[in-house]
Image (tube, rainbow, N blue to C red; front, side, top):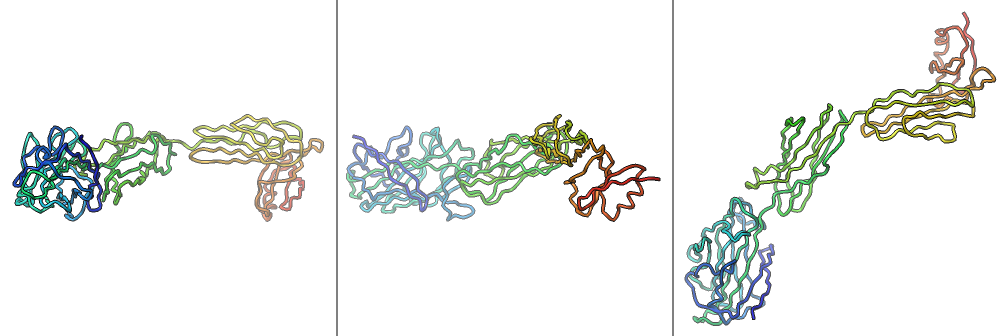
Length: 448
């Protein structure tokens, strides 16, 4: 009965999972000089177990494939390959009982085609053969040596990850075709993944004249990047108005970093940002993750003054409204001194006061670009006295100020106390009301 089992392929800190298949029987015929090609267990191939039989795989038997960089640091172990780059491959077989070792290996893409090419480091113990449009690297002059080194150059335009198919012969060195065991395995060497650009916002409204910072996220999927070039176009009316590159240094595998694109929108035109990774320095990888962010300009609302009376007789109603053009989020009114002081929208709003005094009418306009508050005061006076009675002036914040009103309650001017006499001289003939800084009210008459 054919059985399958799994072993771990340990690569000096890099762990790859390798699947091995046993045969009906494990047969050995010595191809100690160079094994015949096409027996790696790759798709459409047999294995050396057609001849090598009798041996038993032990739990301690392992196979290790380690990939090393060649430039710039030949001692650096790599976990992902870059297209077109050459790597030093170390193939090791370990067994406590075998006296002689052999191997054969080929590299294929996901379609079963040749993936890259091999070159020898030590021609005395390794060999390269070609068979059925595939390349094979194997032992030469099998002996107790259980470690082989060779070079593998990755394809320039790989279809995807590359799978290394191999067989390993653990021979008991008895000079016969019995007592030997064959490992059949495969290991995937993944291609380095170009960093991903992740869109943060497809559309973004921005205030005209204000610095805006739309941003995207850059993610390194399965490899460390010493640096990444992020390129972006600023496009206005289908014309590229800015072509720029941002260099991001030191992005570790799996890390996501936000990249801010700072700009100021100065007119009514929409701005389209096109952002992608500049792959010219990433081993000829073609990157298709392009994201777009549309910046839509927003103008600060244009606000008129509050429309409504400055004074009203007690008990009478008054209408207030405000005109606002442009984009805004909300308009909130606050009428001091009435039972339902909060109102919404531009108006008109009908209100009345039943208590004498001076009250604030406050309206706040909230928008993404600017929040604005306008305050005016309304004097509520007693018609029986035929003149307004001023009680409070909450909008006069400085206690050293006085305020001059017409007899009807319309504010003329608030000024410092020491300037009172000079301003009275400038008033025309008639009656006026002055609110002192201590809150007292006096009535004056200006005559020729």
